[in-house]
Amino acid sequence: MPGRFQRKTANSVSSQALADFKVGVDNVIFSVDTAQNRLLVLLVMRQEEPFLGQWSFPGTLVRRGESLEDAAYRILAEKIRVKNLYLEQLYTFGGPNRDPRESPGSYGSRYLSVSYFALVRFAEAELIADRVSGIAWYPLDQVPQLAFDHNQILEYGHRRLRNKLEYSPVAFEVLPELFTLSDLYQLYTTVLGEGFSDYSNFRSRLLKLGFLSDTGVKVSRGAGRPASLYRFDAEAFAPLKDKPLVFI
Amino acid sequence: MPGRFQRKTANSVSSQALADFKVGVDNVIFSVDTAQNRLLVLLVMRQEEPFLGQWSFPGTLVRRGESLEDAAYRILAEKIRVKNLYLEQLYTFGGPNRDPRESPGSYGSRYLSVSYFALVRFAEAELIADRVSGIAWYPLDQVPQLAFDHNQILEYGHRRLRNKLEYSPVAFEVLPELFTLSDLYQLYTTVLGEGFSDYSNFRSRLLKLGFLSDTGVKVSRGAGRPASLYRFDAEAFAPLKDKPLVFI
DNA sequence: ACAAAAGTGTTTTTTATACACCCATGC
DNA sequence: GCATGGGTGTATAAAAAACACTTTTGT
Image (cartoon, rainbow over all chains, first blue to last red; front, top):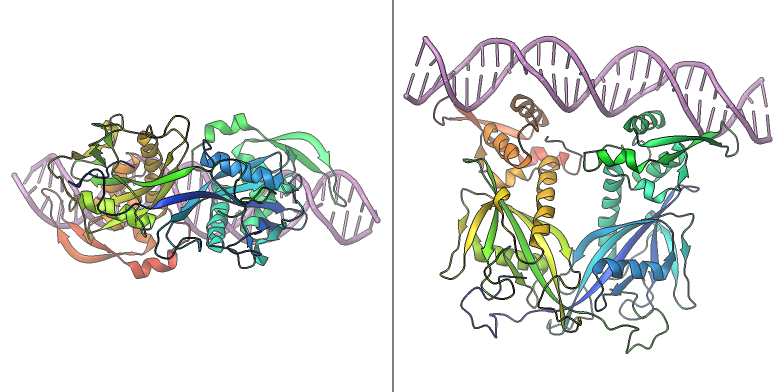
């Protein structure tokens, strides 16, 4: 932002014409269906040109007085009702010609997309479908060709998700208040793939970290021994914040 | 970008006025002065309002037909001549009211900053000072109050630098072609602080990774036993790419 | 000779990995 | 009783951390 006109050009005309931008926000919203062991991403069907009829991420243009993050929350809230979520900025895609609406001579507006990454609780996430718009959870391995450069954004988001899971306690933002260690393990397995760790080792590593507290309450899910319900103890976690954690 | 007007509003007027954006790029450029064991960041003195006379990161507005990354490289090249560098996108700051040029009623343009993070070779970096503009390397612990939200950006960049150093081979992009293991160790020490690792352990860990090849050539620097010059072997490193690496 | 810097090796502790096995429940 | 999922423990391997020591130079 600063520093332009630092060369001795007149203040009125820089050496080159500046690009004029429309700024949009696109959300890569993940959730984990633990029942079916599937990692899902939320797609919406485009209702207008360009890319009419193609799937894409829920997005919106940023309004006056609205922060980027607010815009991300707004479009999310328009598509899905959810109590708990994790959201952070992913990456900004802003090269010319990523949107066909840009006129070829690159006059007119450039379209810039600030992408956000979100993780929501699948069980309580309620999709908001109005009459016209298609909206659906897609298993990650069945995502079709998307509008714009959204396939690329998805790849980026997926990488971020895996990293987040390994190094930060995002999982707990997206699990129910009370959960079993198997719930947690399944979530990790679904996102990171089988073989990231053995259940028993995962278990003892997590417990040793000391921020999971056993409520003593047991739940039985079909056959097998009932499991203890645990709770994420934010206070106990606080001192570990910004220390390198390993959940793997 | 997609998804706007998905509700049943007329296509001409959305429910709210959209923000009109000017998009800038700001570079957080780091270098390491190994001679003096200092981590430096490049600052330029602003020559115009707002924040005239305050230090800031080198930045520029994005031109027509220019990608964000191109803009980042352009402003970098205007301020500094350098042969080797590492550059990647950092974060996008785009809340309203981060730039005083925005009119209070939030009409007119919003200023959005896509920040980039760069690491350059200190020894060969040549600052380009024209008559009017101040430009200087600042030790990280002596950085003054900066223009805009640049102090916040700096904090963000510093965190990224530390992470990069721990998990990726950026250091080699910024060391000379041939370097001693002490050079490497000093670089790490300067960025991560003393006590991140003992020299001998650091040494054996790095060598065990197998992508540093001993050229056999020795250099003597004052007193003490001469050191071997090493080279980063990109081929040997290739298979380790995107595997979790630990340089700590 | 000795200080300074480079380089090697050893010991101890901690963490990761792979399993084997016991426990409590539904059917 | 036995299959199923939950939970504990142990044995081994690997890695991290601490530190003692040797080598080669300049002065």
